[in-house]
Length: 93
Image (cartoon, rainbow, N blue to C red; front, side, top):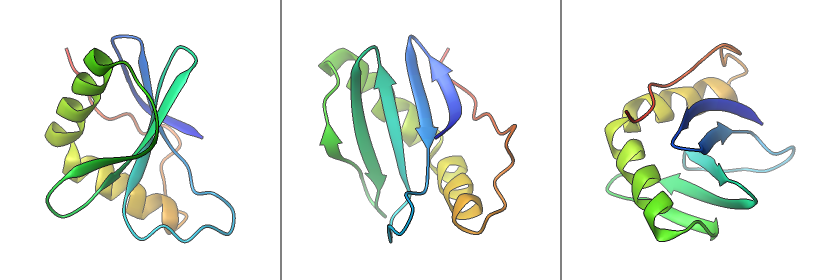
């Protein structure tokens, strides 16, 4: 899993699971021992699994809305084997 952002104690990462066929861009949000996975659709950002405390989830969703295009570009690069290992997407401040 590659970390692409980090803010307010939340680590955001992306990974391509071996053999998995994800059609939509997705990312993982990790806060302490909790983790949630989100997919980006054309209109929404949807949690597909896991749990974060509501205040952390609000931060993650806000960040993802602001950085939607960058997350989608990183996802595309990852699937095409072109993801820059030093990529960092601007965090919430």
